[in-house]
Image 1 (tube, rainbow, N blue to C red):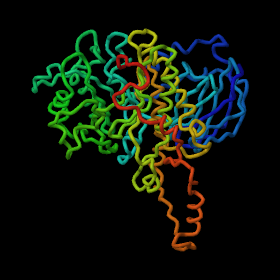
Image 2: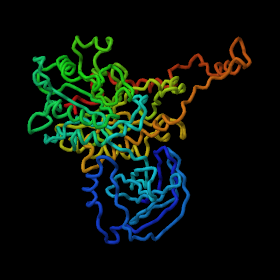
Image 3: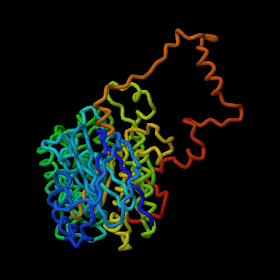
Image 4: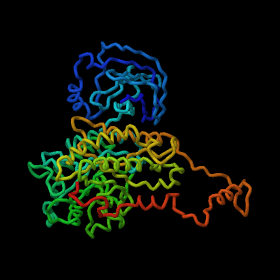
Length: 549
């Protein structure tokens, strides 16, 4: 199979220019040490705050090809070059950014991300690159501090506009049944590496005692640990509080659901959370609406997947306690909670391993839906007047499992889904050719919404998280630009026909439907409206019901 020519995608707010191309013989071909094994352990130590730096080619290595080039790549542009990679060789690419030079070697060790090496003292930028050898595709984006990435965004940013990495059954990193365990690292490590959405399932330990605060962390009918119960406050909330104290620019979105084998009710859970946990409004955001980032900094924003006790339905001027996701669409490819605030992809019933491709497709479809949204920023009249102003919180679960099949346990599915989604984000996310929009058209802010993952951080691999965070770049750029005003034409100076400007009257006549035309809002075919309707809340629309993942 022929190796494709090199393509370079710039997902940063800074234009780049490729200035120098060098070719080296592969280190392994020269009998060199296999650096893959050496760097795997090292990258695990280095990846908790910033991107791991890949080793460069040996300093004594000499290029057998040295070519000056000039290939500009604008912000958010993909450039297909005429550079033909060859087998058994490495490419060294040197880029220039505002007079400073940075270089990267490809392929990268372990096919993981690498930081571009600055060639000048006191560099102004830091960039991360992901290289996909199968496609000869290099994606470059601005590096970010994973423990404080929200500090780059303004207070006025709607939380629904962000690209947010999350974890599914977040506390299930303890020693547990392989069908129960969904995470490789602790919640503390998850937060330090950029995770900002936590999926929590609990069971009240003594629901009939109003003075008992105990909430056991569970996954479906099982405890999250085989070595003893883990608890909501001691083993979760205390770590979150410490993280937010250390990183006050950040917020944690926490989805809470009642599971387990006990006889507790949703109503009992709601009273426990209200009385014993969400008492400090400086730490907890419990209104039934999606806040701005400024309102949420330093706080836990709770999404409730449980019903309320009657005594709490009058909270917040009658809107209730916490963001309402009680009517969560079950096992759904594209569903909406009854409030309309949350749009979900949560198809989890993978009966056979061959169905994993279906799960990947549903996940990337949800990414495309999220990418088309345009956030309403202060003073942006053009966005405020658009239909896209009604932006839901997109929640996209990459997780799935089948309790009865070992090849469909969470770690096995994540091993296929996570690399596929990383590849999609690098190559196709928010590209006009991957949507229904014409090539080159403006297709939204490029957000991913909340992407909920299994087994991220295994062996120090946080590339999926880095790629999700990279998709905040368009939003960051919009926040730095002056707001766009909605253009209003001065029709009072235009010639009129029966009190209507001639040009407008002619256009209305042209656009008027024929008698036999079928009108559908937004010009969407009736068949598509029917097929894309929301999954009925609480119903299984895709597969026979299984044990929820």
